[in-house]
Length: 104
Image (tube, rainbow, N blue to C red):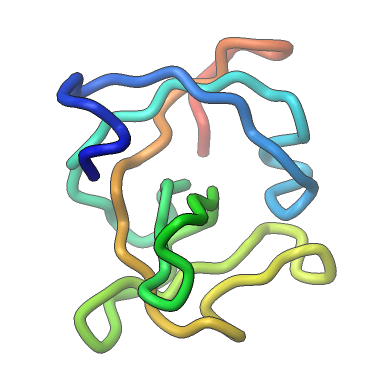
């Protein structure tokens, strides 16, 4: 978590197609760090087997000390189906560009 800094809110750019159509490659979003996720939230995660990789996925349920998460576009997503439970670092709340609005 130290690589994300101490601020509670962060802006980040989504990369890749795994969350389409909810989020698309290049969307800029607002992340609330250390927020407690609920099933259905879009979250920033890290897997124990890939600690250097951060990914945006949808929280499904708690499982084995982490969260089972999936991409909204399953054919384009590597997620808990392959990598197991993930550590949730924060919850994405709003899209800033190109289509501003709350993330659902």
